Length: 113
Length: 112
Image (cartoon, rainbow over all chains, first blue to last red):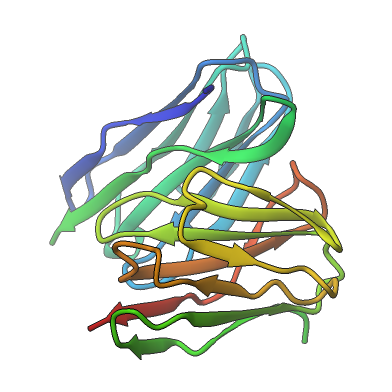
């Protein structure tokens, strides 16, 4: 079936370094959503992008939706220990007539103080 | 105070027993979902429901069952047929199939 993949699976960075995770879909998406799951917690919605080429910022986080609406990225500038967690992208995909939000495989970010 | 609740937070069961996990939302959302998450892994969809009295199998429905008799409630039963039930179970709801999902705090099930 159609999938949403993320790379890298894991990322270890020194505190203060930048971090980027990439999300790729096998099909064009009407929108892309990003979620963050802290260790031991549950996923929390961060943002939704809808337009081709759209860029949105939340403080140190920059989200981008590709021109073809098949890929997206999340970039964190100057990481802090509070950024630790797993970041998931999610896109609406129709498989065999069933429409649902499909989550990516996730990127786990760990910060080295 | 609107939200989605799951109970209990931790659950222990003996092998061979069925167990039902609770999920309630007061967000007036039509769609509800159950996910399974194993340590260090992503979210795998078990079942979802887009409307009351209707639900569909997700990617890993074998050994699980659900009901959606009320809009607010979407309980998940882990049956004895589920070969490896120990996991973190997350319930979520959304206004529609493509809208942002709100997750409950999760239930950690351990089968001994």
